[in-house]
Each structure stands twice: as C-alpha cells, then as structure tokens.
Image 1 (cartoon, rainbow, N blue to C red):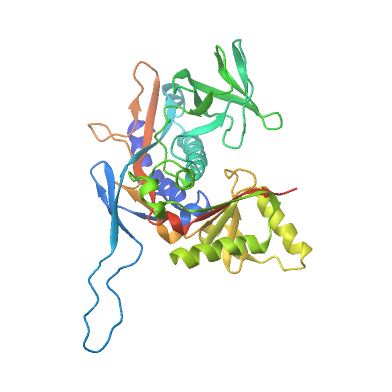
Image 2: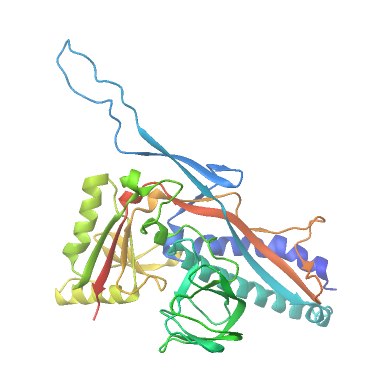
Length: 388
C-alpha cells in the first residue's frame, strides 16, 4: 500500500538523483560550461583569493648584474554570501489517500509534481544566470491610480504563468506579496494576477516571491556598475569587463572579433562561449547569408545545439535582452556550493512534512551556492545591436 513513508523513500532514492542531474546539466548550455565545486566555501560564505595582473619578479640583465627584484602575484579576496535556492512541491492529503490502493496513480501524481518542480527550477536557474542578484523580473511600464489585477510591464521575457511574485515601490517597500500570475499577454506586455494591487507607478517593479536581493550573482552583476564580490570597482579596474554599445548599428564579424581580440590582447583571456538574444542570432545568420558564408553547427555537452563562430559555440537564450551578446571565457566561472541539491529534512529525517494548519504535505529541495567569476575583465558584452 502506498503511504507517506513510501513517498519519502521515493523522493530520496529515486527522484533526487534524476532532479540533481537535470538541474546541473540540462538547464541551458551556459550552466553546463560552469564547473561546480565545494572549494572556497567557509561557513555561510564563499571566501576566495584571486590573482590579477602579472608576477613582477621577471627581468633581464648582464652576466654579473643584480637579479630581478622579487615582486609576486597581485591578490584580492572575494567574499560572497552563499545564496539559498529552494524549490517546493505540495500534495494534498486527499490525493494521497485516493491513490493509496493504486500504485500507478500515486506514481503518476508524484511524477507530475516532480516534473512541475523541475520545469520551474530550470526556468528560474536559467533566468538567474543572466540576472544581477537583485531578482527584478521587470519594471511597471504603465501607472494605475486605482486597484487593478492587470499590470503592464517593461518586458515579459522573465515572467511566466504560475509564477508567484511580489511588487515593490521605488523605496524597496513591498506593496503586494505573493500574487500569482494567471495570464501573460506577450504582445501587449500585460500580466494578470490573482490579487488586486491598490495602485502601481512606473517606478514599481516585480520579483519572484521573497527573492529580492537573494538570487545568484549572474552576468547582470558582472557587467553592471555596482561593486562586486565585496570589492570596489573604482579601486580594482580588473573587475570591469569589456562593454560596447553599438547604438543601433548592425552586427558584423569585425565587431565580434574586435571584442575577442581586445580581451585576448589586454587580459590574455580566451573566449570559448558566445551567448546572445534570439534576435541577435537571427541577425548573425542573416549576416552570414548576405556574405555567402556557411552556417556551421556544433553539438555541446547536454545535447544542446549551437552555431559555430570560428570554432566557438554561439547559442541564443530567451533571458537575454534584445540586441545583446555576451562573449565569455567560461573557465573563469565557478559555481561554489556548500552541497549539491538536497531535500530539506526534518528532525526525524523525513523530507515530506505536513504544512502547518493545512491538509497538505510539502517537500523542499535546497541548494546553497553562488556563481563567481575569477576574471571579470576577461569577459565582453555587446549591446544596442540592430536586428531589423
């Protein structure tokens, strides 16, 4: 007979391995290129010593002259707090009891919940890779002085039906908590939620529930202007990556090569991965066709397909803003983690627990980790690309 003990064992022994493998290798091509490690994790923080510049203890001289003065590597210390990543499933007591005598029905129920959790987790992990850690999904584009359940956003790239969101004002005050998105109009950029917000202004913004300021340190932070990893950019220019705004100019091979050559020449970094918005990929293919060049393809780890730019994989991602392209050396990135994905266990070791005051049972997947780039100056970003 199926019971909670059976389900608990299944989550631990059967589903955990599958879910972990999927979340580590099948989120998107970029994540598969980032090494995952437990090194440099100290308590709740990632504390990492990184070198920059060159060792200065090198020189030439005459046969009897002085040896070069010792001048070792330049070091800086990163300090980043581990982010807490969660994913929960919920099964009602009624559903469990209804399937107690039917193993097949119970397996289907559990499979459906796990597939939903996996889909949502992959979506949000992929989104966080390109975020700045603050968790902002979009800005409010149209003000409303009256209560409403329909909100016009600046972009709907990062929202989906089913998401539970919070709404904040410009001062960082939460004006609506845990509202679920029930519809998305991607043409008009309007979302509908299951709660009324009393009013919204164009300085308001939305985030995933309870996630403001707690998401992974993604590319948005690396290419942003705020200080990063506990260090001031103004005092450490090597923290500043290459950025070029094309100001609505068309993309050409020379522009891409200029970025690659610049970071190779100035930092010694070698670009091994290019990712861009869908419209930029189309513009790239159009450029190849216009110049009668072959469109070459390659297969990456995880089965992902990519275009090839001089042997460098070029992929598109739905979470990259229109007109943007990133040129990265993924060897410089690490996912530092306290542990891999695990179920949150109670005192008795069970992962399935009754939700307080509700006839439902929940289980929560957890991972404590963050992404660190050892050499931000070895990365590049092109923006403002014309893609008409």
